[in-house]
Length: 110
Image 1 (tube, rainbow, N blue to C red):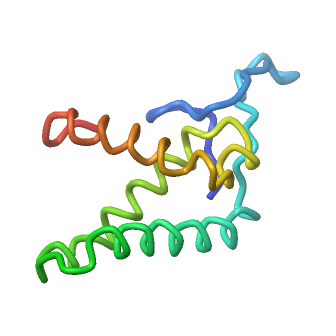
Image 2 (tube, rainbow, N blue to C red):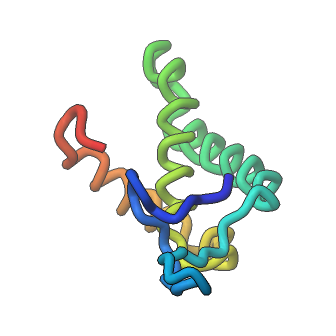
């Protein structure tokens, strides 16, 4: 899941450089090579929620996979490095920070 140069959307985390043609390009650590690590972390996040709230409603259980995917995407995009992204010691704090932002954001906001 590579990110573009930021045109027309959210700018990726990274450093901006000018290429030889004078165009701005974003350098980022994220790439399609991260997909296996992302799948593992998605499963880890899903287990965290299921362990914390094993008796939640059927509706909550149906919405959980989509919510976990959105949380993971935000954690992935917000991480400054793969090491930070994969750090399980800080994962819960990062998930909480992302969830607070998602809850505070008005409906329909990007």
